[in-house]
Amino acid sequence: LNCIQRDDESLSQYLERLIQIKAQVLNAPEETVITATVEGLAIGQCAAHFARTYPTTVKELFEIMRQYARSDDDLKK
Image 1 (cartoon, rainbow, N blue to C red):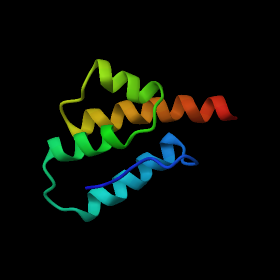
Image 2: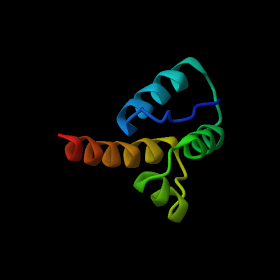
Image 3: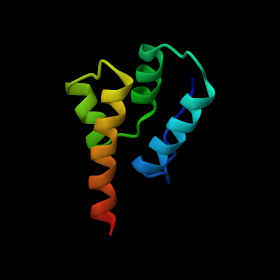
Image 4: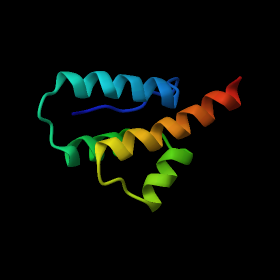
């Protein structure tokens, strides 16, 4: 699972791409998905959050990313 957030990619776009990749990779271990996702994040508030509080489930990971993505999208409007 190799997924890195592109320079021109918003957090919400990165999250959508991750969800699609995860759907294609059946039975990927949660720890692998979490590690690949966090390591692929561009530096920002979401990455800083995970540096302080590492998610323990993919559900938690995606929920936190959604919150930051919504915040980022609202700021760009």
